[in-house]
Length: 187
Image (tube, rainbow, N blue to C red):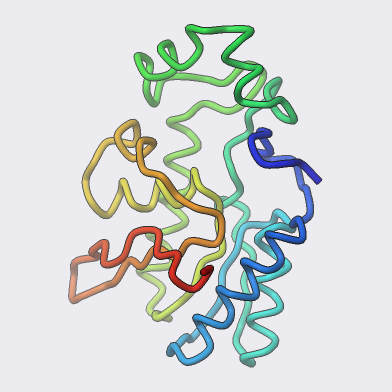
């Protein structure tokens, strides 16, 4: 289990005790919400609470590997602060290259964005809404970027809390950002 501030990315780490409390709070918040289906990344920190919610509510549950967090490659398991100490220009290079940036021994940012957005649009078009998606910060930012028309680089500036709830709502032919990173249920 990684501590806060450590790059987990594709590492399949379990939820910490705090993460487990946050996921129980999310399930509590969702308890009276109309849902038809539950989706999640295949990483256990998203998949286990999603499967629990689906089972408790008697809903279908679908694993969507495309919602896995970006592969940070050589940076997996390192502390963010250590990466920046070792390479103070890392964030500048990443920002300059945007979706053309490839993480050292990891995934290309544009390819990551495209896979997460494609999976999101497949869900929207599947017609089984309302749905809940248990995903990761990068995947959520990709969905927000797709819905709002902002660049993926700009979406990276959004602060998303673990256990935060973001609501994207389909209205006719349009999907809108309704709620960004609600954390009231975590208090």
